[in-house]
Length: 362
Image (spheres, one colour):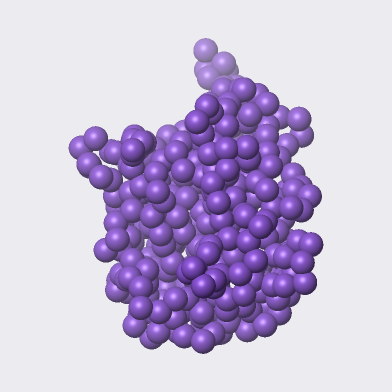
């Protein structure tokens, strides 16, 4: 009996000895099948500054920032306040790619909201040539019932390592549920955790990369230091044209008029937590309901008792945005949980379970 017990203890001792709490920068990989995987990076608990200063808001709407002055958009960011993220979590190194989302669809037969009968998505209007006409301002986006994540109508070859776009909050939640179930069945899912969208506080904390100040971008306040770090409106020709986006641009080419492959800028494009494309490329959804007064430390709902979300928050800006609209503090509300757009994507979070109930709006 004693020898049997000793033998069992000898077997499990190496497992106990090797077990350790994750530390900043540790990584895990979730298998998607067919030699495809998704990498997440551990982010420890900590504090950060949510919101933006009056000085930052003035820069965002100034000559270099280029955001439209006189609107309430910057007010959505709220005043700077210290926010605590009490629990560590794992964040996707990159935005979910077309190839990764395709594995989900192939495995499940899932049909996105844009592909369902009566569905539509917002895409680039290739007939658009300028903002200002005698009849008024014309924007370069239109509703389409014939496009989806499979073809977001960019007019360029869309590669598997591009971030998936034209997917809704409901589509993103479905992807995360599938990923959680897959990893749980395989025994790779850490106990007590699930794959999901990040809360707004988790996303905002992760975006700053460990900085505790209220800087404009994750590297600081100097836009010129962003060269070679992120993809936003810059000096890049639109497909088949000799013109660039006509509003405020960065004074350099990032190589892409539309979205770029994830992690395209390598180590220089990763913040202090090792996350790529946290500013620019595509907007990223969070779990929270949008509150125009500013973000919250705890997840925010329309009805906290029912955990309902009708208009989720997106963060970070996109390839089309002017510099002032692609800062760490920038936040917008999405039209509905079924809404999708060729500028919007997501990245996953591996953390404590957070139940949300998506409610469609009319």
